[in-house]
Image (cartoon, rainbow, N blue to C red):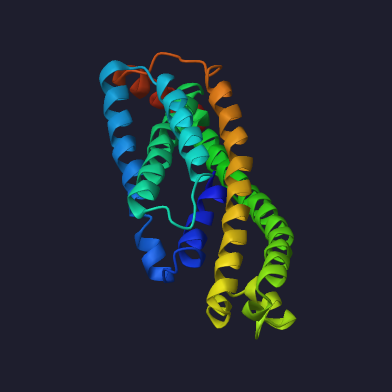
Length: 243
């Protein structure tokens, strides 16, 4: 999931022409979704004692948000992007801490630290693999889409390719600021190639979150431990450690 989300700042910088700072600030709706729904789900779980529904809702929201991201174009207004980002953020807010609660509630108190650490470890591994996977998909599609757009422009308007050297195209993949050195017509074609590449990334991510949504139905919901049970388990674990 995080692997797909890292594409949003790149979209804002390349397609919308935002600076790195501006692109970062425009991710605030995403963070608002995470924080607000983490608070809401936490309060609802504390009040009602049920947590299984929240990962299901969260993964459904994330899948919807990512599918909507695959519709982004060069002219998509920021308010639409904000809605998509809030949906994904809300989905993460409903899911992340709820999974931790479910995990901690399903193990003995003495194993809680190990279980929580394992969850954090595997989440980090998943994020790392996701970034590498979606980055590879993005780079692969861009390598295919750029020559297509250039060939179209070469056939219809060769003058638009003035100053477009192979060295600049090679540098473009590492530094998108090079885009400004091309003619406006070529810039439009290159941006279109980037947009098409982002589409493939988001459409690749959507089935993965959809699989997570289906797996969430198999989550076993056990009654939350009461304060008294938590205290007793803590004392028992402490006694075993001393023994």
